[in-house]
Length: 145
Length: 145
DNA sequence: GTGCGTGCAAACGGTTTGCATGCTT
DNA sequence: AAGCATGCAAACCGTTTGCACGCAC
Image (cartoon, rainbow over all chains, first blue to last red; front, side):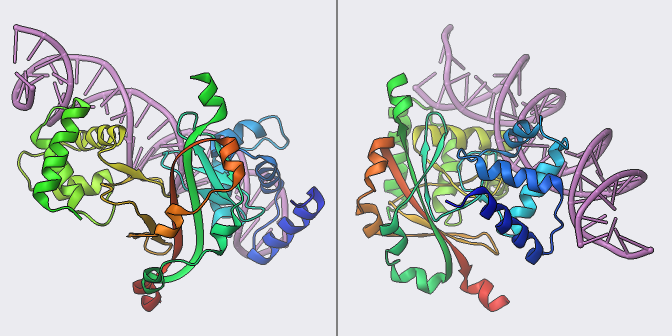
């Protein structure tokens, strides 16, 4: 986990090399998403930024997340839900998804990262990334039942 | 891979035990989805059913897929796209997704299915399912470049 | 006959887009 | 000064819903 200064420096550099202008909105959106651990949707993120200055429109949040995702500054998480959810991928990780409350939690799984893929995958094409998604019911929901 | 008769019998039984009525529309939708290998969206599926009898409305396709998913007769695939895509899960499998053409291909990976999850996952809650999603560029898109 | 499933049409929610203005470079 | 980024508002698309009719049970 990087500290805030490092993260900021990394963001600035990433924007530069992607040819993206450094605007207060983009900075705020990135900072807010980088601090979040719950993979917020665009709308959720917009709520959290309401009180910030400058006021950021929802459109800009959508556009900015799209731009970030395009340039690898953020990632859209794959879920079976309709609403898109985003994250800044600090370290290689995977997702636990609670089928009741839809909460998404990160976890590390080095053995999976290192595991050899089946041969047929090589025949399919060139692999760029892999992710594990684990479904279940989280402790909180189990107790709530 | 089951043959059509077996699949039909399985479907009938699954509907019965789920308390779902056996309608021509449901049968057609299931058959079409079971034959598809490309994880179609509701709208794509509706297109394919256009010529069939009885004519099936798009609403019914949506509703039926939702019902199927609820009862485990079909599954919504987790992707980073906005449009939902569905499949009938014949055997345990995982997904290759081409980041260019968005095609989704199934593959088997028994080693992953059997692999031990990290301890922290047990602490999170009760696991019900796991899926691997592998991203890359498929052969066709590599050559097209 | 009962009531679930369907089709129609209208509503809905999340997301995208055209345009004029503003601010980064 | 040039042109990308933003905000506004309207459009858009995939999906959901209320209602009345029809069909599986």
